[in-house]
Image 1: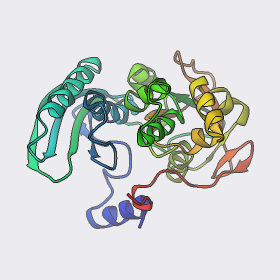
Image 2: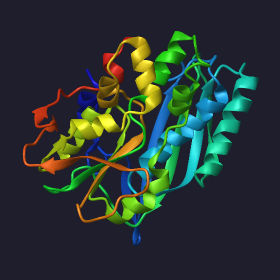
Image 3: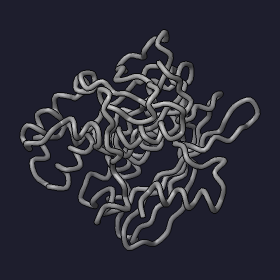
Image 4: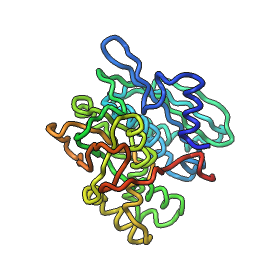
Length: 303
């Protein structure tokens, strides 16, 4: 079992009209309501000794990333918690993070649910709105492939957190793990110009394959352009660890960046980079050579 296989089973049982993208698009008059949900589980997504304020911020931002990757404006969210009932200090700081992130992204917490659970879980459901439906596979041959956000940094930050040492030394990459640079800040550009888009949550390559599988063409990444977007903190970390930063960028996971396609003639938003183009061959390529379809998968990881 893996995530894609499980999703296929679910779609076969309940239908796939609304299932299979970053959000569910529901037409509402002249606009679309955008629905998304994410869950963070103790000992899977976080440890209880991590900063609960930052966990709260991340809980909101990963859902905002789904909405804004489709050019949407986040509006409201509901937060459901599973707790033991002994987490007063943790919960106060968690909700301070949720509150501050909600204010940053212009949305309101309007309710939720509570349950007993041996492990803490935080389930956040969010609603947004957009005048357009931007899917994963609407790109055309020759279009630009554009990245906005950080790749590879979140995986490095997670490794530092799990190791539990030198956290001050690597605080910049830990901060990116909890506070990803989401597409919220360029959502208006995506709404106006994007022909297709995807929130990068399981790794660049596997999420690009998910775009290709929904479209008619492939995506060729330029290695030199991908290497140029590797941030200095990640370079330093990988030099320290003796690992390849390109591997982190291609296959990292939990980046919450956005990839979108647009016509070559259209402008780029500030902070975005062109890293490839849409090509005839229906695969994900790096300088013309197919990349292995792999990335993070909950059901292939031994917790």
